[in-house]
Image 1 (cartoon, helix red, strand yellow):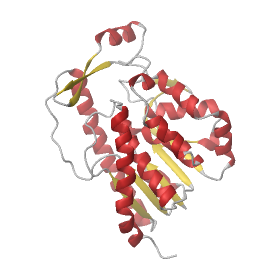
Image 2: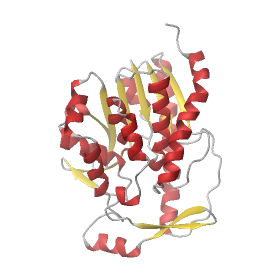
Image 3: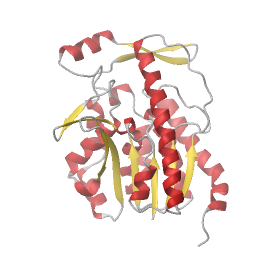
Image 4: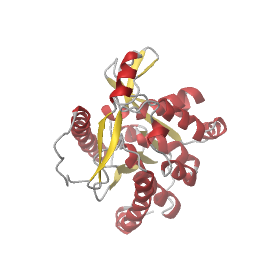
Length: 302
């Protein structure tokens, strides 16, 4: 069984889409299991349907308004770099309305329902493929994996949305009596789960460079500090997930093919820039193409 695993990474998901497009359309990889975290969960349903051009159009046309119903920060350009500032008015309105987060992301849920139709959902349910999204249950302090096989259309769309909710900047969702947030808070790269579900070969797309290539600039405000802190923690979680995945793969004699980003795409993946995301999709495709020869050398003989 072959699995495709896509890590979290916000706007960098466009790069993962390009890699997946090459692997599926040009390299001929067919997957029995699709598992995604955060932005990865947005991609996997459409990839499993084979509707790659459709999800490419979505990823290369979204902006902040596509994601946030109430965006908690402003975006400023300085010396060609995008930095974030606090949108004090939106944050105050959110707190006044009783929200527990700085911003809200209900527009993303609308986008998910708009781009994944009930008919497409039924088509996925009829396939043998398993589509799984990762969420973090904050109430029970555990990571959970939600398979399309276990839910109806509305519930599964909500689980996809929950997997992407990067709290405290996006919505905190209460569902089934528990509070849920971004799956990346517990499992950024769910390789272990793919192996538990029977995968013998995993293509893992990691939306991070294999080696750290940058030093962060000093934080300008509390939001910049929070994003730096969360990025630091998520990087540690990601590396731990990869180490555990490698260990489990060795124990089960499984193969993992890693696709890291070759360069730092962005230091703030909550900024959704259409032009950059279109470029990242193409970069992902070209990167996978350049690496395909090396991958073919490590694939088992038929």
